[in-house]
Image (tube, rainbow, N blue to C red; front, side, top):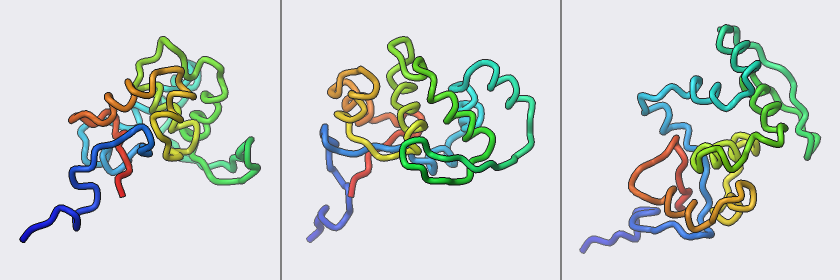
Length: 145
């Protein structure tokens, strides 16, 4: 006798309380270029400077909310700077890009569609329907455990 209970997440349907995050292993298997996609989220002047640089320097970054210090590469630092712009997440940005930007700005902190709705100004139900469909958008996946 076979049971689906021994496969975590098998046939579990995400809900408004299911947490999502960027699954970077999806990017490793994808034919899409993560660096190019990340560059597309930067301010134009940052994008131009970093797209011409292959240098991979790291810097200390102090989280303005927690005071925690951690290492970021130049692209990671540029994303944190871009995330401080009030227009980083706006109604003109696609839903998937807005959700992706929320995860970028928060250090990929897992969040529910309800939490994502608060940060994007989009409907939690629309976020849930988009992210829990058959297609994985930009590596954004449910954490089913």
